[in-house]
Length: 143
Image (cartoon, rainbow, N blue to C red; front, top):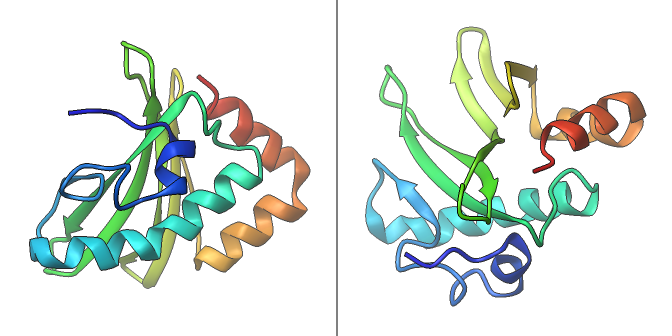
């Protein structure tokens, strides 16, 4: 399977992805993958615009997950575009957990770190207003 850089993917998500629109695994109907990816593209763009994801040296892939209670949700994952394809981390814009829906961001760079906010908007606000947090994410998502 050809890997497209995040930059190439964002230029044309339909043609610069595989037949499953970059989804690696899914529990939803295959016919719904295209509409699901279009909900995730703006979130990928935001992370690139904020300098957290290097659009040239990483590729993006998606998972559609079925929680224990049967709720479906999607997440976005990033890996290096080199031969090693090292996993850098990901973001789950909305997942149902005890206490309601949550947005979860995690990185994997020598240790497992999770950051949760209540909504995607809360995470965006934290990234744009907390420069120390933003810089930390840049370092953790760098390849």
